[in-house]
Amino acid sequence: MAALRAGTADVRNPLVSSGLNNMARVLLLATTTGYQTRAFGEAAERLGVDLVFATDRCRVLDDPWMDHALPIRFYDEQASVSTIVEAARNNPIDGVLAVGDQPTVVAARVSEALGLPGHPPEAAAAARNKLATRERLGAAGLLAPSFVRDLLTGDPHELASSLVFPSVVKPLALSGSRGVMRVNDRAELVTAYYRLRSLLQSPDIRAERNTAHEFVLVEEFIPGREFALEGLMDHGALHPLALFDKPDPLDGPFFEETIYLTPSSLPPGRQQAIVTVVSQAASALGLRHGPVHAECRVNDRGVYVLEVAARPIGGLCAKALRFVRPTDPGVMISLEELLLRHALGEWSTDWTRETMASGVMMIPIPRRGVLRGVRGVDEARAVPGIVDVRMTAKTDQVLVPLPEGASYLGFVFARGDSRDVVERALRSSHARLQFVIDPEVPVLQSRHG
Image (cartoon, rainbow, N blue to C red; front, side, top):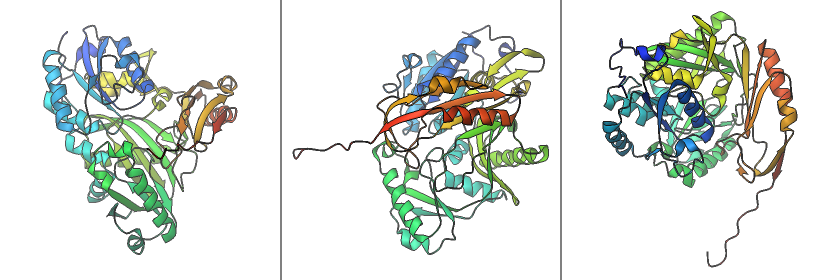
């Protein structure tokens, strides 16, 4: 295997552009479900790339791609980096990618240790922490909500006296909208505060051993429409890949995302404004090389960047994106393949998103309970414009909606001639799905435990 290292900003790997005829090795750090890791594995097979997984879920992921995964613990960053660097002595790594928020700092530290391009570790850490993000964006002069940080063991009644409502209660380091709640008065603030405290003290979150979970962030609520930008940082320059509209209002009390649509319906000037501000935000955080996923709110005052994550879009949402190269329009690749190529040194600007409109619906969990089955999947797939309906929740799985939950029932994908056509197809498909959910039966303990 040839070592295809790109140790400086100007060095590019010509083997990627010529079809990766020599085997290259990419390390993928992941805590996510098997569906997303499988997509990377399939993309690596198409490219002829040796993909190595590092994860803390080797015994959890029921996926053949995980058969030879490198077991690490993301909460123990130093040990994880040492394990990976030691393994790389005999099996050199040519590129590094992270999927999910938790692995981003380890991925950055591995890239730094191996002399590979990537996001600086301190930038990845700041992007993963909502408080650090607020502080850095504010220091850069970007629009930002007012905020306060408080110990999770503090007195919410005392905190409430210093707030302006409506506000948003947030954890510092959970992904997506988990634990995020809008509060409109003091009573709602107190309720949300205790609810977040209970969530952050749950066993799965305590297992992360993250000191950020000892705090709560309360921000001013920012009205407006919400957008997501998928992009790649290329040695400090942002290359936007797709701008997604979120057509459903995200005004609370929880902030469950449902539909992403691209291309955006915004006028070109306002789209460019989002790209410009996200680029400034990424620079303020110190992000430099690799995937980024940004969430923004836009209103009459301008663009508010809510976060810029140092990783690609989550779940199966990447399936909504395909890319072409103007010099070879007959070839179309997935986001996973584009990320692998970029990790190995190919210019991301060689590729642009396809011209056809596309979108994804993250199927929300309607209520807590035990999933017994899903009806109407074939009918949902038969809706014109629908590309696929993928159920990721398993039969007999306990479903937990936001703000405590951390997953969706599944995903619906559509393509069409226009954004409106795609949105109608997604909503029509979702309307054909029926979910059989039984109440969750509490587990009773005996007197003897």
